[in-house]
Length: 496
View 1 (cartoon, rainbow, N blue to C red):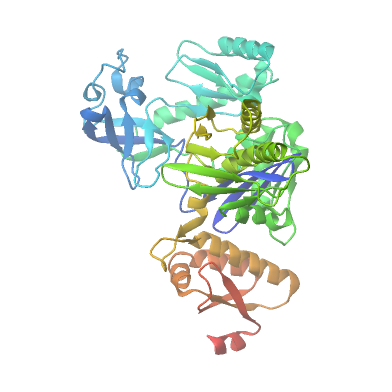
View 2 (view 1 turned 135 degrees about the vertical axis):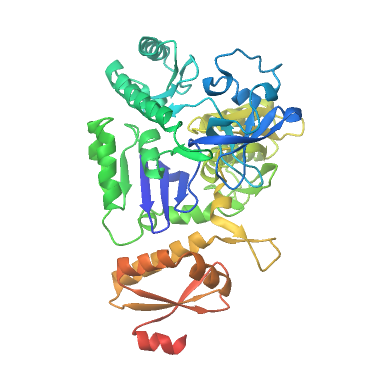
């Protein structure tokens, strides 16, 4: 059973993707840290680096974007229909310092690095990806039926002309030419609007912003393979119904509005799984466990038998633990959004056949991952090497921050998570009591941050539940908030 659970809070939206009642993916979008992936900008080249075959482009973000020559040579806006050999053409012949160009973000800024951009603009739709600057036709690799691949390719050949390319997405499987053409017409209109917009105003300037989290999830993930989509915001619920009407009305009855007062993530037991995904140790049902160490360069996953003693012999115990671990590793990689190089230290096995079986189970479990993964095999040291394409920040980077009390050697929750905890506590209080005032004990570090940056969010929480929120500096743990008092305003003011 597959489900999508969407939580719209005061300062963030979260979408949980569930498979067989387990959380496998989590998407988070905050109001002041919206993602830039897919956005299109009118930028200005600020520096050309011949030695790196790249250029820096000012697109109006905190850090300049990075443009490789391979991502710049096919745009009519830059090269005036000239033909370039990527391997031989110097970057300075493709772009010039001070030049205004249209670029799209293909990789978000991460750490000290700015966003990576391309001049090869693409427009993702429900059933296809429209590519105005190439003539390529592609079919999603997840569509494995050869007859269906040929059918979709034939439709693409009919719909496209020599001026653009198309990629058929996974959800295009089984769709009619009319449905796909309707999607293409919508994307062409979007492209025309951008062509008009690019001539207006000076760089840097955003000229197209990708859909918000809820709309993207509906477009990219919600399908007939999803048993239901549940959301706790009435306005967004109605927006989804309108959005899905353009795709397929038959999906409308799978959309539900969550009208209970309690936290939707607590109700579906999602929050507990998120908290577990922030831990280094992950327990397996058999009693074995994983230890996941995330570093800047790579991620190392160690498999241990733990409490599992097996039922027959040591060889069987090791094999069964490794097979169970391979499935859980695939889930944890998706859930934590781990990218880059991944090294897995399975328990040493007793035959090459066992090695192959475990790797096959790992590859099978990874097939559900929408992000490209490659299992490179087992090294001479018995370690499994794999890679996963980096797509945005890891879950730990989104939810945790460096601890200010231990010289950044530990991690604490971000202020967004503290606001979410306060929202959930106030919601719970409103469900079970009639009080209108609550006093929280909070660490001084977060007290300052909330007063400076999140007063609007706290006021929204107060207004939504008709409960006034007060804080008192306390020596509680940085990750904690505690209720000190619920009662009248006078009673609380005596304690502040």
